Length: 376
Image (cartoon, rainbow, N blue to C red; front, side, top):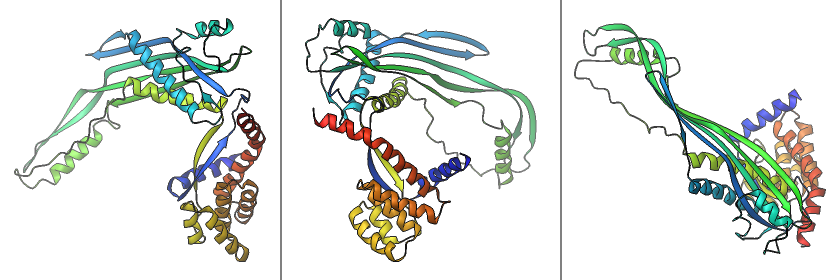
């Protein structure tokens, strides 16, 4: 296990700077929803919204609750609903039924009542996705207090230095909180809940506050500037960068909700994943360039002739990448295994084999789900 973790770490490090080949991989749904082909997206209810702003001035803290209007809550729910629709629209699993009939219901309980009583007009939808949102956000406007020895240095010739012990306030602002999103898929006929997902995401960001190391670094900078001063006419230009700004409330929640809806899509739908896989260096340069350019058939013709005469591990691996990109998983696995046998310390080869083993395990479920969708 320790060796595998080391290999994985090395592979990630290499992937960050290595040339890459882009592949598209289909993953089966984690839950078998092959009987569902048409899906509507219903209401997303804001179950709880707690926003608190804390302000500190001169050591005194004040706390106030921030209230969002019904319009703002509705806007948030619609934003998350749009992300659910966007994720499902990418999948070959479902045909989305675009209707506001279910979405206009107040909450999930009303939706379940309508489904149970068959009191809906949209008959083609086979399942409905609904959800609830819980949000807690804390805004803090405060300051760090440090006891520091400040060095005051006069500029120019004959400068003097005076050290004074003083309490210093460093203002800061921060935002932190939690987003919990429940997403549910309910089959209409027969009525049953197929999938319930409850996931949370935490976030925190802060700007300002006391610098690391206090004033030590600033004092050193001041000393260096004084030592380099020629006369009183010298001037030092200070270049200020863009001021850091905390992300907006809707931006934060939208990003976190996007992460959760992506995970939900993996549970209920076939998903298309884009992979950027590192290309091995040190082998044949032409074969490497062909793989990077996506000319996989030309790369296979070239590298097969090359490896038949001189089977270098880098060329075998790149040949495997070309086969994998064209869906020839069995041939790709043979090339990865031969490359791994030549250099078992290379993490790319080990991860290539592991990736294909997962592909082989998932293939029966993927084939079954695709066949069910094609037969709709």
